Image (cartoon, rainbow, N blue to C red; front, side, top):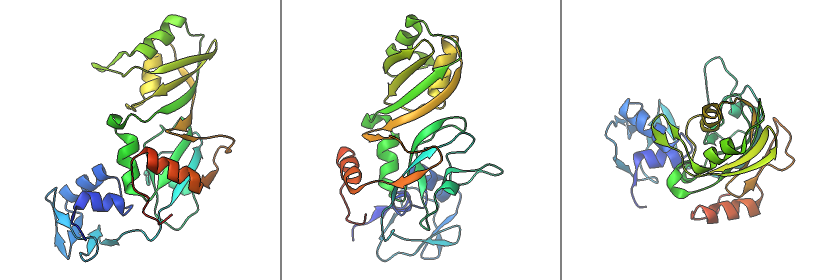
Length: 241
């Protein structure tokens, strides 16, 4: 089989994201055939090389799992976080899954969890232009000028946000579609126009919609949803779903 970069192998095996894989490699937590590897870009053969992360064998998943979760408030979008409940605690499956992208602790809504490491990079990186839609309630009524400023783009920590689509629902509620995901971006944008987010709920990620899934509940993606998602992300269906 063709050789692949070690961080890519870790990601596609569902052990961690590609970026976190780089951190693990640099910290000396990854071994290949018993040898500690600390050089990024090292390539491995997925069929013959024995890879371990923190002493635990890492291999290709027998089956790719794709789960939609309606994340409730107070839960961290991580696989582990000391002293805090995490999203993987809410999904009762034996496979090791990791969340794709993040919702901050106080936000709710659609979160995708999977062991298909290819998905994380394609949905998280802004260069792929995949939409994320949010339903936002703020403390005080928003002026049209404030919504226009968020739609046009505004500087956050010296970096301009990308143009967004904004639709008013009521005086203090609106929907916004982003094609990026800066840290706490919507909350910071709302603060910049002199308001405060009361509730933030993600209702769509790419073509996946939250629908009527109850808060705190999860479900497997349908085969149709998986096919459409992989097609949209320009990824090959590996036939393990």
